[in-house]
Length: 235
Length: 215
Image 1: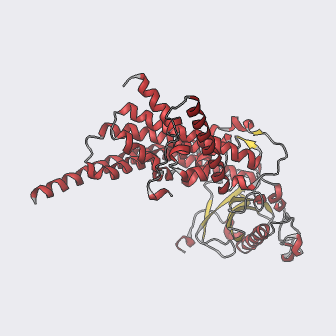
Image 2: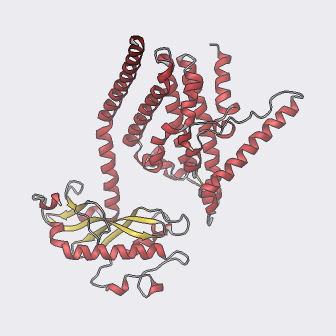
């Protein structure tokens, strides 16, 4: 693999095939934890770590796993990795662990993890697989962060609230009160806010794609159709 | 037939192999992080406790000085909970109890409350709740100081009719638009104080015999 291919993987994961706004996979955490920037990005990063690790773990053994039992084996490996991440967060980032709670173990059921392992890691070598998982996770993190920022700003008038849970007490003053004395806008905090916000993000992404398409005259970079078939467990 | 049996066996062995490796990784991670997890959970508990029982008012190892309390309707608990006892030079200072208000606007509200040895409330905190954000969640300290209104109250001074929101003829504040939530909390705190009154001596009994453990 040369450098260009790695760049393509990164570009694919973060932008072109973004899990949040293009593939629309892994909506469960997106809706639930994107109420603030810190929550959204923390879970996004935890997912990215799990995806990178699972890519790295599965690529080297892909030729030893019989085809018929590959899904149970993949899920087993992903579940082990998620549980390891959960233990580590419980031990060293307790505050964040309490906030994210049930959504950490639920990373296992996030179909994007299995989807990338199945689509990429089971056909490629270790390094590209790890990068692919991480890039996809990073794309998800970006969407969760932007969506979290929108909801937090509209809903509470702040940004980065709860950052001390992720980075320790020294970060306590980093919370930005953008709108002082803001009364709050409940809709943005509740789950409908996540749907509406996500809709806006998808629209924005499509608009950017269309504009690029027009400017490259006759270019064929239209909006990728959404492949919505996914693990039933998540949705 | 033999071939099928062999390939099935192969698949099974394969799956078992991965399970064993997975279990080994999990077990070692658990082993490595266990102490840190226990420590951070205790720190968290200690932080919560010292919020309502000032650190200066006790000198014992409060996390270790515990008492198992069987489920009790007055506490609203459905399973046994742990009470933490604060002592100053061996004398009872305060006890930290868990209580559940079953009738919040959207389900249970979990509280911890600290009662001083004389029956006065040292403080109350909401540990978990599902009340409407922005409306009923003012019972949570980060949102509003409402919950500190319990500090120093006791059943000596406030009789039963006083343990209600002002709207119902009691002595406690509330915010218009969300009265169900404070009603539930006030009721639960009052009941927990009744429990404390009935079980005061048992609650402060020294740690050795744990007779009611079986119950």
